[in-house]
Length: 438
Length: 192
Image 1 (tube, rainbow over the protein chains, first blue to last red):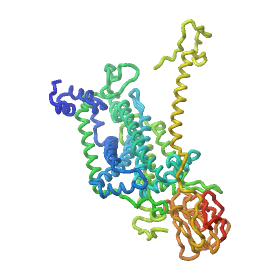
Image 2: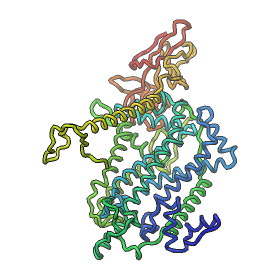
Image 3: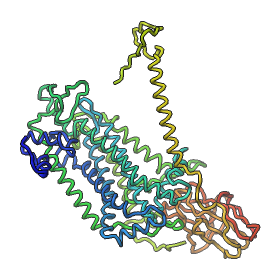
Image 4: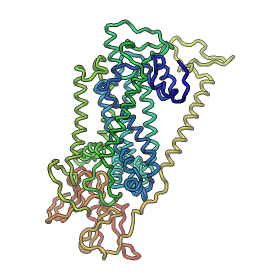
């Protein structure tokens, strides 16, 4: 490698390597690139296999971290001043409305994108192990489910902070759902609120959860998630290439001391070489992967910024314990849960089971449990791993999509067809006039 | 990985010098080193559990600065016939001639504040084996629960009736006192 003189050249060469050798070196030597493999398959770079949804959610998380830190300088987590500091952000701080809007819209996008990422991984059976040694994709799927839950909790704790009506009634309903859980429910509510009523101690707890604890959890889980992706041999479409290739080619050569695609055999210092014919199917990560990564980052930032311009972040009236807004609606991604807790109070003989327990605790817990065991009960052939709409997996896809569809239908009903007193109205029906107060 | 082989001290007599063919390590008496190792690990774990307990326990407050559950609301004369909503306390005070009773405004489903809906005409209701006439009902904006005028739930996800609280007369200044720590049955009335 020729000597680089200026600092600019030193920075530039890793991103624009002049040779194959430099491209490999850059990944090993550059701190920002070290978590990539030296080479990637063309298949995993494709736009329409993964839709880069995991990458998009990581970029959204970065936007949220950066805007969040700025918001932390401007927001005061006290019940007297929280609402006013958000109002100042909206009307008095230069670009405050934009930073808050970008933070909010990125959070909404992140919920949606993480959810879509999960659907993509399921539909391509990418949560399953195939031939390579040391794979544990089911574990990474579970980490993904935890990341989805952490994303939802981050959103929940986030929209409480303005201390407006949306915030107040969301904490009321949210913590009452928690208290409906058997045995541990009441202590959990007490711990979350730091008391029995929603006041300063509740606000500071949700603030710390939102700004420190949950982001840390996401960061740790995300790091492990990425490490596992490397450890499992990259995206599942690589496995598909390897399997379809194995049928015709020879046994893999066990000669390399490290693997370019990161598939280790685990038993000795010798590791199995990549399962695919490297020269035909792979390209150097730098600049092929880095270039696409930067493109995805730019598009994501641009789209989020544009949406932040177009969709203003709402601020409701200040929190008021005596008046519940009519109707009181959660953000769209929790409306299916609001529908569930509405529709699941059962009366069996003399016993009434609260919908808070059935729809708020049991059904969501079952749903998470179902997601967790999915990779362990999926018995479709491994040739389907890493492919979209495999014929042998039609039944699996159908069941999964029905569950997703049910959640979407409940979300749509909650968003567009619920009016005052949570009554059902068709979208074209006008809501009756309701008195603002008692 | 750590070696699982039992370490034998020099000159220490071993009871079973010949390991059994099935290799039942667990059945062998632990060496002193293994025992001390486990003891040390145990001590570390107990210490950690103690620290975790300390941190978590501190988050359960011992002292709460919350409004009292028993409070004065003013002399009975201030309350006119019908219902009045006490905003801060989320409770309805209802007066029928010289009797008073208090109904909670907190929905029993998930804790939203119910609204009182005045009915256009008096409605005859049969609930809980009784028949009565009512002029208002309670309805919850969050999930659509409905309650009769006496607080009995009849539609929506609410699992039980709205709470009725004990009312008293303060002996010192004759004010009405609401005691939200004491839930009474729905027939409770304070006569003044």
